[in-house]
Amino acid sequence: MDTRTVGVLGGGQLGRMFVEAANNRNISVAVLDKKASPAKQINSYNGVDGSFTNAQAIRELARKCDILTVEIEHVDTDVLEELENESLARGKSIEIQPSWQTIRIIQDKFLQKQRLIEAQVDVAESRPFSTVSKKEIKKVHKQIGFPFMLKARKGAYDGRGNYPVRSTEDLEPAMKKLQGRELYAEKWADFAMELAVMVVKTKNEADPLVWESSTKSFPTVETVHQDSICKLVYAPARGLSDKLNAQAQKLARRAVASFKGKGVFGVEMFLLKDDSILVNEIAPRPHNSGHYTIEACRLSQYDAHLLAILDRPIPAKSLQLLNPAIMLNILGGADPNSYLNLANAADAAGAKVHLYGKGNATKGRKMGHLTLVGDSMPELEEEMRHLITGADRLHD
Ligand code: ATP
Ligand code: MG
Ligand code: MG
Image 1 (cartoon, rainbow, N blue to C red):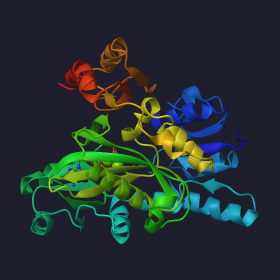
Image 2: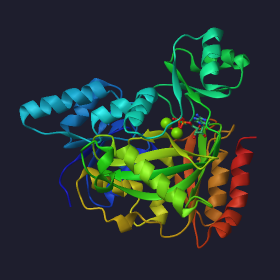
Image 3: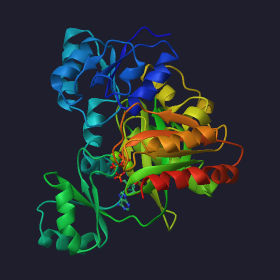
Image 4: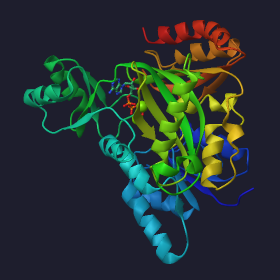
């Protein structure tokens, strides 16, 4: 189908499901991550053992590939920039998708927000948080009020860079959790629902005005987070009017169109109580809120990412929802193996179970997910009820 080799920085669960999509098309993928990482377990290609933050390892991966992509945004973008410049000079092209410039902006949540504001995409009001002191908290409180979300600018995932600040009392625990990281404060979004859209960018240009021709999109889904970690995804979003759905789709596509490069992007949004929609954050890669596409759409988000970076056609119809679906994350509990109880219950219920091959669990770690696809959302909700109880029991 395509003789080019795709290199992926990161071999976690997203890399693993990306390899599954590539395997189906006989496309070689070289993975950079630790030996026996989730993606490497199902990939026989000779990748690179090492870290996606290590410049030397990234260079070694690049030597084996024609296109480089990422499953995580927290990578060394300086070396990606160098590689692109060197390959232009040498005449041997290595393509980096999405662009290292996009990854660099997105990996700093504060810069990401600035870029979205320039593109006239609505986001929660933010303030840089310079010194860690009661005085600073009081200043920020005056500007954006309590509660606000204190966030790490870089290296954040699964809520690990967030701390909700409700009063000055929270300063100490917040600082303890986020010690040593560059921070900013974000106005609290009193949302009615969290939404997400997986957007596929098929053109390199960065221009929000041409969003209709540079992007396509999967349906609008509803996400439910607990302690800042994604727990459930409902596809389609429950009770969302056609008007708000169209608004969310357009906002997500305009936001992604403002970044350079190709591939799938996850757009997380807040639907506020006054029906306005803000972008929370963008992931320049497949995303947890798009796992449901594996079973519920003709093309999964992983297929779409692969096809987009290889410049292959993606019919808009193939991104439509075939049937309603609910996805539940399987997170590690207090006991290293207790998550398997939930996976077994899901199997017994006829759900599609995905375990990532991470071995023993630690509390809150994403060990797998399960997806139920069916005829109607109320039926699925009923079927899902005992699995959600099972998931909750893991965390008691
Ligand atoms: P991911 O794993 O999606 O990358 P993350 O660690 O980057 O997550 P965010 O997406 O910033 O974190 O936040 C995680 C969750 O915390 C959100 O989905 C939402 O539920 C809550 N949250 C984040 N920011 C705010 C805010 N400004 N107001 C209210 N809730 C928020
Ligand atoms: Mg994030
Ligand atoms: Mg998020």
